[in-house]
Image (cartoon, one colour):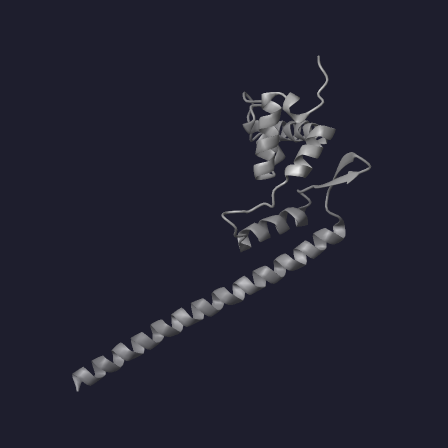
Length: 164
């Protein structure tokens, strides 16, 4: 087996994985879409865990790491807009501890779960967002109800005037 000394020496599957990863930022889905483990159940948690560790092994290769760092795009989500759902989804992942951050220390890639403090802070922000959403929803509902009541009152007055 020959030594891999440049990115173009990687297999087509490995290059497909890295290119997909650069576009999506999702290591597991990039692993599957590159053709790895094509015959397994991609929704099976054990298979996803295996895919995650295999993807991290690929991403920890020095040449891959270098290529990703040099070509890492500024992620533009849904044509440039990040909406409230994206933010709440991310905060939910942080709060539940179901997300890992990549940390590079002395050339070694580590994957760190959010600290308890970060989970608490994410929970606080989520509560604020949900309270604002609830307040906005109740205002809209109140305005709609007020409008309906006013139109009913107006039609009742018109009926009274017609009867006289």
